Image (cartoon, rainbow, N blue to C red):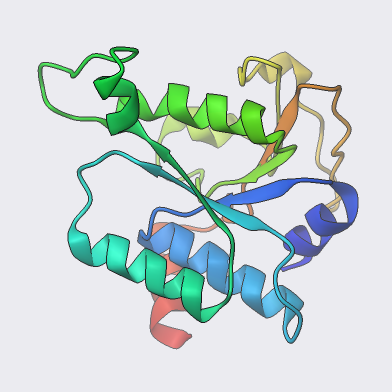
Length: 183
């Protein structure tokens, strides 16, 4: 929860990525707990692939209404309809989320983007910091990442850059499921 509070104090336009999956549900729950009884000072961003179950979208909208949150949606389908992106032969749309996400971050001038990434998910994420600097093109450069000693985080960034924030970095999938069961 201290990471959410740190971001609230250090950044002007933070946003939480919210897909309705287990990690983003835990992230939102932690954010709500961090600021209760006040509302969370962040908006939500859903990068909609167009392949969500209706129940997921209903849950997303219910959560937004229940907690009086602001929601931005970046739609992969919009990019496909305009011919900016092309459908993949395998039908998966997860890799197509990058452009809508990047453009929404730039358009809304989000300077901190909370994600639910965990280091146990894949080798590439093991190198990510909790505060992970991205350049103006949303690119990650491991050489520009800062050390994070004693839970001290450095959110400095130049105009146009943003910081991805991964509060669950050191959690495992089991930690996430145990938190859900407990809370």
